[in-house]
Image 1 (cartoon, protein in one colour):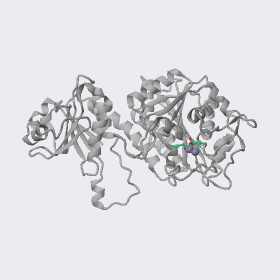
Image 2 (image 1 turned 90 degrees about the vertical axis):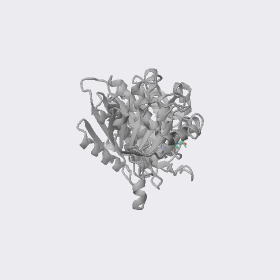
Image 3 (image 1 turned 90 degrees about the horizontal axis):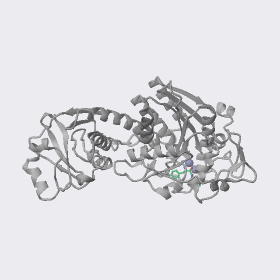
Image 4 (image 1 turned 45 degrees about the vertical axis):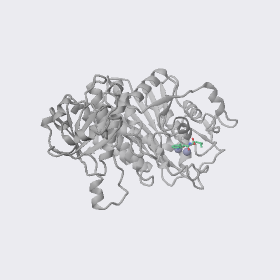
Length: 497
Ligand code: BES
Ligand code: ZN
Ligand code: ZN
């Protein structure tokens, strides 16, 4: 994406469309646009009431004598109600309306408002324009004409506000690039995006960014590390597991160290507790936690954040096979605790447990976060409006909640009551992996808690309801959302200050 800036309305150059915002009641927020706005055709649209400036309203006009082929009016709703999220939604609607119409270059008028700082306005507009500017069509045959029509926006020229908007735009684009990276991994075929493919991605990123050090454990090394739960899940798969560690040292003098563990199940069939039809079709998304880790790391590299950040990705398929691990059997984890396997579909917590205990023992985290499409129940509880948050530390939970509000990748904190531990008592092993549907998101998090050290602040993010959506949402495209990338980058930005 290319960004440019025009200090004044009259100085703008040719483009495919001019985007002009309006408050509800058709008050236009950019006085410099007056000349264009006095165009009689535009006045017709306003006076007939065909366009009212309602939040998210969009109208295309075709006016003579403008440097742009079209004018897009976008309604922002009442000025006093303006939020960054309103801007994301409204400008996101503009991008969505452009995709598939051969529009590549936009002149975008930035609104001014006493209710929101210029910086926040620039952020909201940029995120709105950029987040939906994504199409996953690698696997679709298109005739050349369609391919041309379906292209993405390529250049945005901002009009109004300060030139600093360009810096903000570049920064937001850097983060969105991480979001697109995560989406591509999730949307890709599970038969392509395998544990070995994730290893290749890690190697690719390592090559590109000198600040990253990558370590990969192959199956033999995983056996040597005694990661018995990751190996158990891998038994049913014809592909080897992988364990990936990528360390970014942006502040070598500091001991502060955020470690993020991402669930990397490249496909979840459920194993012997095979998922039914209707439950399996979206399960290529079960490595969304891993994808969020990669995307966040990429964004952190782009931004050159002064933080120490390590991602850990345990990865395998959860397949069904004569060799699959058997519910009822007991396996020994990396931490040494034995686990009675209750349901082979509760595989995420198993691979996370080994990764968390490895992180605690070997990586010296000052805070530990795991991110995973862990439980179907979290979607029942929160839908796709928020991800679940469970934590042993109020300060970390609060920092994450705030990052969630800022990015609108919202979190909702759920309890880790001591009583949940009772549900994981086993007669034949140290703990069991699952105990039915009751409070299953919280019990899953409680299982993970057995593998972290309560002296280290730890948070668990359950993104099973937010990572992959079967309907396009506001400014998010259908399927992979890339959730977690913006959230974690926001948290890390806060830590680097
Ligand atoms: N990968 C699933 C969770 C999931 C569900 C992710 C829906 C995305 C969308 C996880 O491994 C799983 O199968 N969880 C089960 C656990 C239970 C049946 C043992 C669940 O929560 O339904
Ligand atoms: Zn599962
Ligand atoms: Zn799963």
